[in-house]
Length: 78
Ligand code: SF4
Ligand code: SF4
Image (cartoon, rainbow, N blue to C red; front, side, top):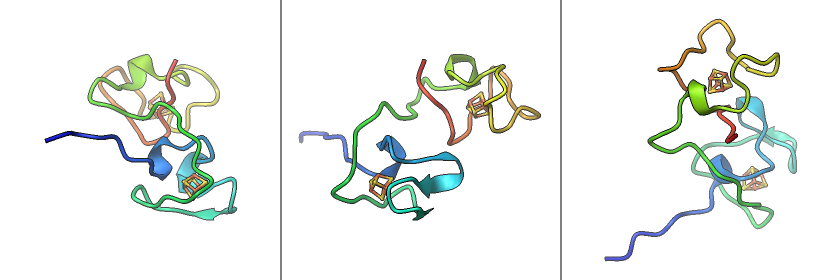
């Protein structure tokens, strides 16, 4: 069996915080997708706040909760 990656909103460059799509200016779901998808590295099993590009910056969306063992859907690769 071949295991493949899927293109969905969660690994699209057009996805903003709070699951807003910048392309369509509307809220989307993790499992949605469309023809405007642009691939970006997404959350994986090794992701955490400690390797999030937003950790300890003013752009972290959950500064009160962020810690080395936490993660949120706004995680961004370094
Ligand atoms: S452009 Fe398409 S795939 Fe990308 S976030 Fe918007 S709806 Fe999802
Ligand atoms: S709380 Fe979210 S945005 Fe902030 S550092 Fe953690 S993963 Fe990144």
